[in-house]
Image (cartoon, rainbow, N blue to C red; front, side, top):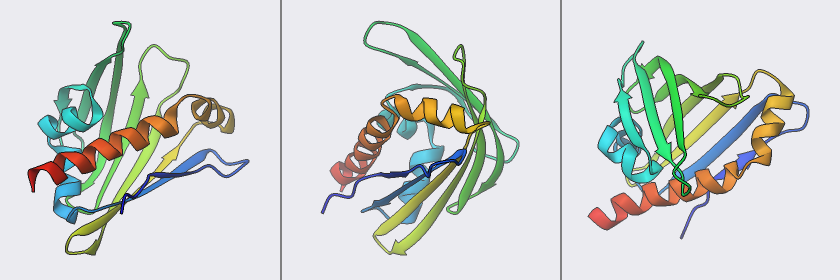
Length: 154
């Protein structure tokens, strides 16, 4: 059964809640977020830096179909293996301010896990602008690729 990423954006709030259940053990789901070579595969991005630790930083660059480069970076504020990552997320050269992301990883069974991401924006307006982009479609496609990477390895 294919599980889809769910996006909940309650009116009048500065946040988005993202949830997804995976047919993956908790350890593999967490690994997909902290190992650069795996991140590159499912996110379709180049990892320039990924310091998976408290006070670590990260930097990714993506090139779109027109050849335009998009730079993303942030700082990891909390890092608890197989449980949670709290980090900032910045899209350089865009009007969007830095956002705060809380990622929580949960074991459901030995072979399934759940990811919950709370993204907090500076304002409701910033959150609403993000939702006008193909944000939900993009994250769902990326999560499908993440699931497929590990499914093919079995």
